Image 1 (cartoon, rainbow, N blue to C red):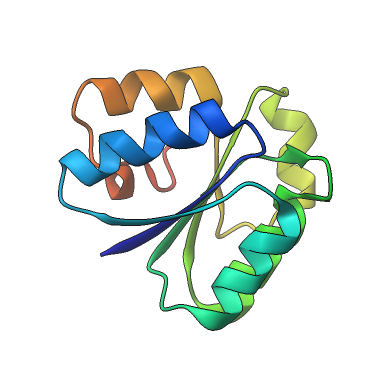
Image 2: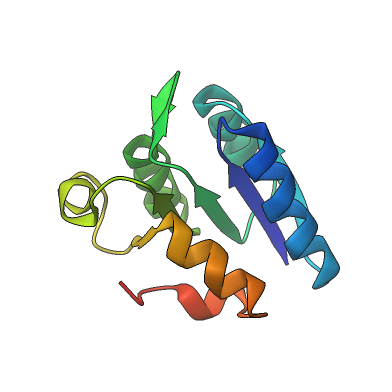
Length: 117
């Protein structure tokens, strides 16, 4: 399974990548909204995990493209979830970033977090 991580926080992207690689996932990392769009359009991706707020784009844009391409998407954000949910498709899982990181540290698989919000 190929997972695409998008967060402009490079340290967080690296941490997520390491967690997923340890579990056997193939991981791509994008540290900008433009780069994630490029990778979604050029690579076979099964799951996108994206931040909502980025310097050059937002998770809503990413989530909408994922919906159009039939790709599972998790938006992990530090913002209040009720503020983000109206801007992403209903097929997108929106989770609190700290909760998401905590679940991953407990060996939860990313796909198990789809639609838990």
